[in-house]
Length: 194
Image 1 (cartoon, rainbow, N blue to C red):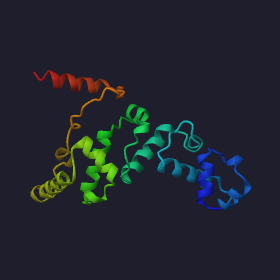
Image 2: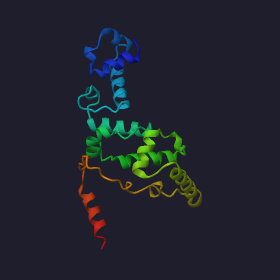
Image 3: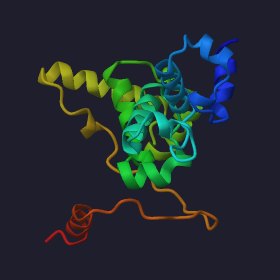
Image 4: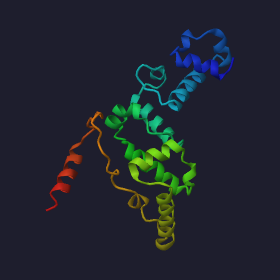
């Protein structure tokens, strides 16, 4: 019995009480160990909370998605578009803000652009307009700001404030995210600057 065997039971949404005895023995008869593996597997594979065994392990859906997003960001994974109806509405994390966080973390850690996986880099480029050359320029500006001001000028000021303009295709489905009153005020002030 291996981790792959345990993963198979997790994929099939088998709860601890229904696990075969040999799998329980592999896990040291520890439900806590199984729960840990369920959570780890669900987060690594960006699984939806509802309809998944993780709902028995993590009782709070919002906490689960918070952990999932943090894991995805730190492991430079693609934005979980398949969960966007929840992530955007409930957690207010758009693909744009997700990739801004990733790029900001990379720049702060002074990591190379090449550390970004290809598909993540392509999606970030599509939304932020930051490719390899722009990233190098951003790194240089950030280093320069640190040296000149001794106190780091906010990296967020150097990053784009809004997504790159894109053509909305006729086959796309567009749905509003979580719109707060403060969002409407910002739009009003933007459109009526006087």
